[in-house]
Image (tube, rainbow, N blue to C red):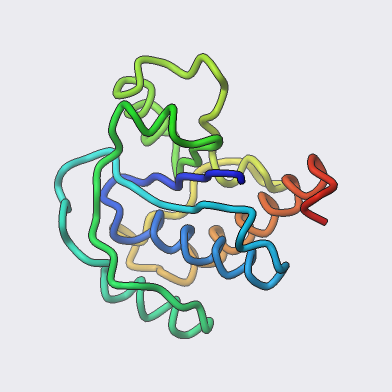
Length: 156
């Protein structure tokens, strides 16, 4: 089983969107039982809050189901629990390196680094452009799944 943790600042917009998009892609590929997928925040600002309503709206528009999860913060133990820790932006990476005390196993990656246009996922909290965030997340999750399938023939 491949364990993936998606991470953003507050765990109410981008990382839960990525969590549920990736779960949907895994289900479409008949691979749900091969993955454990979760999300978390690097900050404590939104702890216990649900997915932000505009993020839910975008998931609904694209037919992506989600549950009533509450924001949580990453912990040092998450580093050992997950195989891949996927950040939405470089700022998240810096915070995770501080929280985890480094990345000796090279588990931390940016989501868009799996695409042809590496960089940060658009932050809808500031831009209010949830469609741009969706586009980045959808492209990144699709590319991540393709990368994992290319690396592991049992995922094809």
